[in-house]
Length: 372
Image (cartoon, rainbow, N blue to C red; front, side, top):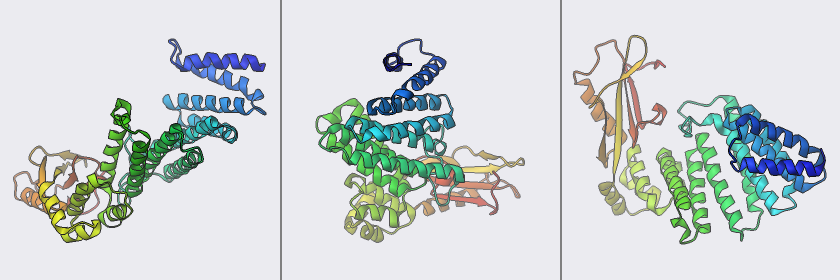
């Protein structure tokens, strides 16, 4: 197909891509494969057409991913990155396209590490459930692809708001990839960097815009979730020393240390705060303890008990261990305790009931291997 005809076909695809009615998935895929075939011969020595070819491979990757064909999506994403790399050296817009292709490739690579809600499946390393070796390698490749995207954005003119925003988005994506690999401290660091970068590019009154406000709110929620999973020593303390713990979240860090069992004086020292300030925060800020008792049936399945053995309460200046001890002692003295040899288990979470690996305290009685 001659070059002009290939460009006409690309223009037709642009209309379909924009959402023209009647573009069924099968038709979209056929148009894309025909378009890629038409563009390829003319893209060999033409950076602009090579960049366009990279975009269309990116569209094909998204199509495959949306209908559940991850392997095909990865192959198309790899082609998109390959065809976008060369033109990136010639034009800033092509460089931005290349960075976005790298980010998309990372998203597709990391897909098995998230659940159906898009939340990390394996965020509780080193003691939680581990991804398979194959999925872990894919996650590491996703981190590397995101780092490459960051390097591209950093090499562009930072006086251009488009490049500033692209870099901020890449920081946010890197945090996502690191959280999926069970690295909450690193993930929190990049959420902070992304938040600061967005604030820098979205000067007042931009943050009041609905889309910008939604992004910042999402980042804030992510950051709080990640900080709750960080260990106090070597996690929250290191973020504080590196000025990567926002002042507004210092109360969360103080409460996190106390939940973990750290004393007020040690919390003050670790976070560089006055002891009186730590005690004031502990008096003024409660945390929500969420608990659940399960009883194991004859078939090995676990049955959660009803209130009060599954519930929540606000707790002030108490450790998770102290709350758990009080609850389990009450359960042992209650009529709800199953007769031997039935087994029961208990889990205590901070803020919301979640995966068992994310509990602040967990036990099974009598001790031993836990049925799946």
